Amino acid sequence: MTVHPTVAAFGTAGGELAVGGIPVSRLAARAGSTPYFAYDRGLITDRIRSLRAALPADVQLSYAVKANPMPAVVQHLSGLVDSFDVASSAEMLVALDTTVPPQRVSFAGPGKTDAELRQAVAAGVTIEMESENEADRAARIGDALGVRPRVAVRVNPDFALKGSGMRMGGGPQQFGVDAERVPALLKQLGATDLEFLGFHVFAGSQNLRAESLMDAQRHTVDLVLRLAEDAPTPVRYVNLGGGFGIPYTGKDQPLDLAAVGANLTELMTGTLRPRLPEARVVIELGRYIVGESGVYVTRVVDRKESRGKTFLVVDGGLHHQLAASGNFGAVIRRNYPLVVGNRFEQEPVETVTVVGSLCTPLDLLGDSVTLPRADVGDLIVLFQAGAYGLTASPAAFLSHPAAAEMLV
Image 1: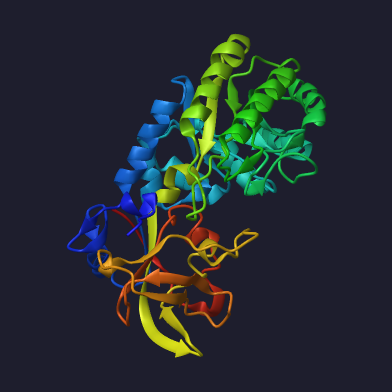
Image 2: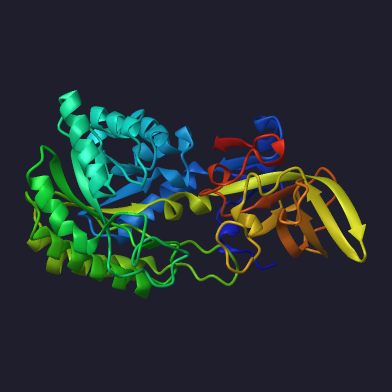
C-alpha cells in the first residue's frame, strides 16, 4: 500500500494511526467527542529543526500566528522560533502571553483599528504599517500614550511570487504600501516621532516551486536595498516574507528546502549582510511550520448507497476544515490525504465518497477515495490539517457543534 509521506510521519499504535504516539480512538476519548483536531508537537519541533539546518544561521524564524493560533501551539513554538507575526489584537494577546518579548512580535494586516493600534503601541510590538493613514494614526496614538511607536513599512512590491496559491504582492493590493510610494512615506516618518525599524515584503503564499521562491527573494532583497537608501535611520529589521508551501495532494511535490536555503545564504553573504549590517533578517512562515503536523478526525455516522455510489457520512465537515472541501481558494478540488484511522493497517478494498454533516453539496471531504471497509463508528482522518483549519473555516455555519483541539 502506497502511503503519502505526511501520513507515514505519524506512525501507528495498535493497528491505528497515532498522533504523538497515541492512537486516534484513544484521542477521541480524551477529546470527549468527535470531530477533533490533533497537532503533533514532535512533528512541529522536527520541522523547526529542519528549517534551522537549511537556512542561514543569521536568518531568524518568525511564526505567522494566523496559520494556527491555538494558544498551546503558540506556547510550544515560543521556545523554538525567534519571533511571532500576528494579524489581530487577539492574536497579539496570545503571543504576548508567551516568553517571546514584545519587541519580537510584529503586527501586520490591513484595516487596523485605532483600538488595535493603541494596544500595539502600548505593548511595544512592531506595527507593520499598511498605509500612510495608518502611519499618521500610529503617530497620534503614540503622542497620546506618551509611547514612541515601533514601526516597519509593509511594502507592496512591484513584482509577484509566481506559482503562489495566494498572491499578496504586485499590482493593486490592500496589503502594504506600493513600492513607488514608500520613499515619500519614509520622508514623512523621518519628520515624525516614530521608531522606524525597517521593511516587510510578502509577495505570496503556498508555493512549492523553489525557483519561484528564490527569484522572489532575490527581487525582495534588491527592493529592500533600494528603499533603504531613503530610510530615515539605519535599517534594523527586514522581513523577507515566506510563501513556503506544503504538498496537499498526491500530485504535489515537496518544496526543495535545501535549494531555497542555499539561495538565501548567497543573498545574505553576498548582498544583504554587507549592505545592511544592523538588520535582523526574518523569514516568516506559518503553514510550512505547522501545516503537516495536524490531523482532523471525524466519525462515520452513516453509510449509505445512492444509485451505485457509496457514501460515508461523518459528523464533521467543511465548517471545521473548509480547505479540504476545496472551498478555500482552490481552483481545482483535489482530495487531501485521507485514511480510516482505526483501520490504518488494513488494505483498501472499496471506493467511497466521504461527505460531511452539513446540508449542502459543498460539504465534500473525499471524492471517490479507496479505503478499507468503513462503517458507522469508524474514524476518518484528514491530513495537512495543522494550518488554516478550524479558525479558517465557517464554524458557525448551520450551527453544528465546534471541534475540539489538542496538542499531543
